[in-house]
Structures are given as C-alpha cells and as structure tokens.
Image (cartoon, rainbow, N blue to C red; front, side, top):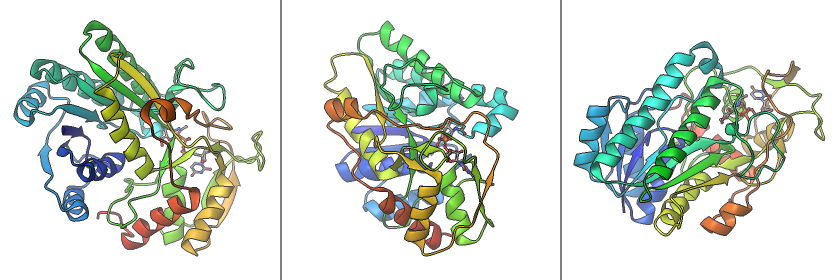
Length: 337
Ligand code: UD1
C-alpha cells in the first residue's frame, strides 16, 4: 500500500513511518517542519534502509494539498499534522482552530478530488472531557476543556459527517492515551520545542540535566499515591496500532469507526518518576505543586475494542518505555538540534 503520512516527521508520525516501511508499505511524508526536524527523514532511511519521499508543504493550502495528492497518488492517508500544546491553544486559540481544522478540510478535499477514500485520523483521549467512565469505552460522550481538545472533537465530527455522506469512505479515528518512549535504536524520539508540557519529556529533561526538578501537579487526587494516574503507551505500540487500523479499513463494513489506543494499565506520576530513575540511573528530584487546571485524577483506556477489531494490543511495559525514552534523550541531549 502507498501511504501519505501528513505530519510524518513528528514524534508519533515518524515512529509510524518506521512501522509502515518495515511492513512493506511505501511512504510519502507531507510536513511543514513547524514542530519537527527535516533531520528525521535521514534517520528514518537509516533505520529502515528504505526510501522515504518527503514533500515540504503547508496543508492548510488546499491548492498545494490537491497537487500533492494528485502527484503522490496514495491508497491511504494517515493524518497526524497539527498543533498539540494545550496551554498554547488557550492563549492562541485562533491558530489552533485554523491550523488543525483547515489542514483536515484541505486533506479531505484533496482526497475526494483524487478518489482516495481511506483515512486514519490522529485523535486523542482528550475528547473524553472531564468526567468519563474509567476505563473509558469509545462510545463515551465527547467534549473538551481547551481549544486543542475542541479541534480534536470538531475534527472527529467533520470526519463523521463526511463518512456518512459518501459510503465509499473508510475512516478510522484513533484516540491516543499518553504516548511515550522512542524507537529502541535511539535515533528518533520526542523533541518538544521549549518547556515540555507533558510529564514524560519533562522527566527526561530533568534526568539529562536540562531542568532542575519535576513539578508534580498535585498529590491530593483520589488515587493510591495522590498523584495523577495515566495510561502511558509506548510510541512503537501506538505506531503498530496505526498499521493495524489501516489494514482494518480495507475490510471494514462501516465507513467510519473509532478505537482507543492505550494499554488499559494505570501509572501515577510518582510511579513514572521512579521507573525513569531506574531506567536512567539518574536522580529525578521533584516538588509537589498545585494541581494543573483541567487535569483529571485518572485516565485509562478500555482496550477491548481495539483488541477485538484490530487484532492489536500494546506489548511494551513501563520500564521499557522509560529505557527507550532515556536512550533517545541521552544520545540526543538537545533533540534534533
Ligand atoms: C495532556 C493534555 C491532553 C493531550 C495529551 C497529549 C492537558 C490537561 N492534557 O494529557 O489534552 O491530549 O497531553 O499527550 O494538558 N504532570 C506533572 N508535571 C508536569 C506535567 C504533567 O505532574 O510537569 C502530571 C499531570 O498533572 C498529569 C500527568 O502528569 O497528572 C500527565 O500529564 P501530561 O503528560 O501533560 O498528559 P495529560 O494531562 O494526560
């Protein structure tokens, strides 16, 4: 299969490209490198020994996206492209709605024109809002607490309506829980710009000495140690979930479906910190600070639907995720820079 990977130079995109290439699929990456590095592409070629085509493109430009789709002639598209920092989305909502929604609409228009009807969309557990049942099944109501989250809810809604309008569409919505880790070779990984928003890259930067200590956002939650509990999933498991979803789309009876990608296992912030200390052999000092507004006590995936329908389940454990994250961080202390 020939797959156009929008946002394929980013963290989850690049790991998915490795899996697609290893699976024998051909890949064209479309990226504007606004939050990723062109260096990723050479590393992908090195890891897989396979060619990777790259198109530098702004996907909010519909004419350019249509031209790309005509030239690339993919069988399917995986759409990772978009902005993803929650805090930034609150201070700059206009650019979040503009970039995330316009890129999706532009890709859809280009796909429709080129007769490409197979799409996997990068969504997030953030669409379950503040009070979902835990573990969370896919049929829980969706909502959001910040503009980033709303762009995912709205993106899903657009795709649901598009899928209903034309029976030939095959669309998979993948709701990620908390991705972490890196490819075990250490050549690709997460490289956040500025201060990391998410706990795992933050811990990793404390371990390497770029930050002094971890702020633990609250230890008075209703959880065993009082800190937030999350479903951390190794990025390579997530990548394999995309390959499974893509191949499910080719035999899927409905035009749209949705799957959680998580492990179903919970880890607290303090447990994660301890696992990272063990994996890195470095101390991770921490201080407990106030809760972060909008955080929930626990977030866990119900994973049975993905297991049943995609034949996929997460294989890698917490320690392996921390070891792989540390290998990437220690081999690339300043990321791709
Ligand atoms: C966050 C986003 C979510 C997004 C996801 C992408 C928020 C509120 N949610 O999820 O919309 O889809 O990232 O990966 O930002 N923590 C600390 N110290 C830190 C950072 C985090 O203690 O420096 C704690 C948080 O309070 C939380 C846990 O670590 O309990 C996980 O936080 P984070 O990594 O930001 O992920 P989520 O909040 O689950």
